[in-house]
Image 1 (cartoon, one colour):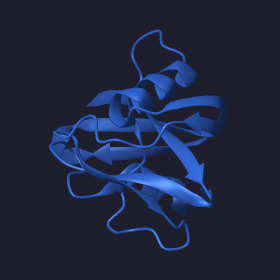
Image 2 (cartoon, one colour):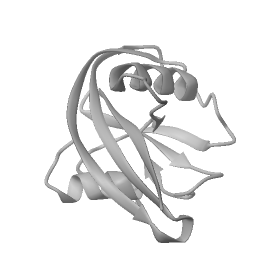
Image 3 (cartoon, one colour):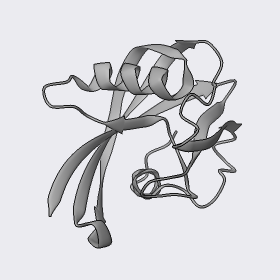
Image 4 (cartoon, helix red, strand yellow):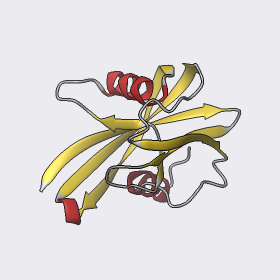
Length: 131
């Protein structure tokens, strides 16, 4: 089984959380945070900045580590450890910079999240973490 590390980035605006609808990869049709794979030797915060810019065109700063989740995809023979961080500040508005990977970006009320959630995010919230 292949082990991979992912990074999920919590970005808030007026109490709402930025979520994207995934398409074209594992978790297609689910709602997840901006983020992606941690590259070998890359710092978590640098990965978060890179992935958010690649996916949304936004720039983030003041990144705080929040926790992690573990997800096994038996059908893909992959185990993901997803590290969650929060961006305290950002600039720009979300744009769909990777339309082959994301159907749309949406600001969502954390008390009324769209379903279904991407498995790592669902696991993170299931551990009692909040957005």
